[in-house]
Length: 337
Length: 172
Image (cartoon, rainbow over the protein chains, first blue to last red):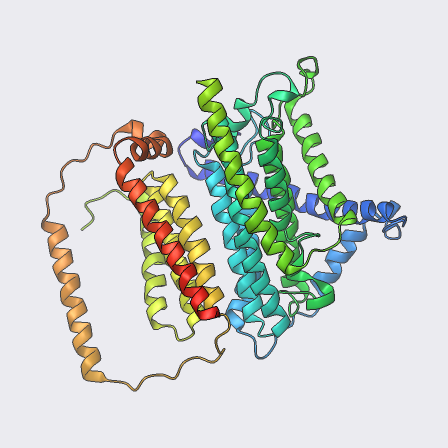
């Protein structure tokens, strides 16, 4: 994959790159379809239910049926809504979620863009989705949607800060913003060379902030059904609603892949004698575990209140993340140099 | 007429230029405040694209992070609670508008003439900077420009505390 990137851009190469992007989009859509199915199954089992089991064998076609239902639904736009922004917002939410996936390296050979500032690219583009959510909430001209949008903006800004600062420790350790170099820097043979253990404080902050960025339980206040009906997408139906949901699950993919790359050693095996297993398999295993953890958290935690959420972000996570940066810098200065 | 080769870079330059100019013009001419902020965000994104064309990826994505992301969201956050209806259109003032148009055209002509007649020194960009400009920026900040950098951070802290003080005063 990397070899294609260095060639001059001719029509033929452009076509190949476009086809790769299309294939990747299909893979991501497939992931989203089965992530939803898997989430419902896992949560069902954890709550002593069966989960979807009617459509297709083992309920495997349940999500396909749900998506089909969304696609053939009537597409409504409220008369008093801001028509242009109402239509623009779902697309604006989805595009960055797919674009951030470009910088994730899956193995030494398999990556889409070898960007020098990959981590910054991720953080910058994911902010645009917040903009889209706020816009969607505002354009709907509905008080619940507006409140959901406001909450979403406040929450995502509050948690973006500790999220980015918690990564600084990783950047200090590997000396690069390039995600590929960050994985390479974790190469030591054993699993304790991964950033997870030297950066355990950063990892905890990162994971909590990531769950909050994803708007998932226990931090799903922007769409708290019991108080806001559905939050920012309450006026959306059919295809546009599907786009918001799609963006949310593509971010699950993105955060799980980013956690794997930053803290779980990417494609590296946990022990030297396990090296015969291809790197991509290790990547997928770690990735699947992170995705499972996200569902696990959703099934087991109650939702927090809005004031608890804000004070957790600013009074706990941010100071801890900053302390982690100082500790890492001290450690590097005293023991490594 | 064309004294440059048509390359992908040139096409991208004109695409980004169109986004920047279109965003800026819409920012001034649109009526609803939220629409203005969106067109401004588009202009910011176009600027980020320009930085990428100039091989300054770090600045480009900081531009997206700070301006297109944070600043736009904060502005929308501030004006979300305003009324949905557009502002009342101001009465047309033909003479004033004609004078402004003449002035703007003169300014454009002046700039165009100045740029066309300027001899640009043959800038030889050092390849090393283009390769890892994040590291180059970091090293410059913490070696040559450490005092201005620290002064800026003090300035920001002062502004931050001042904002809190002002907000507290309003709350009491």
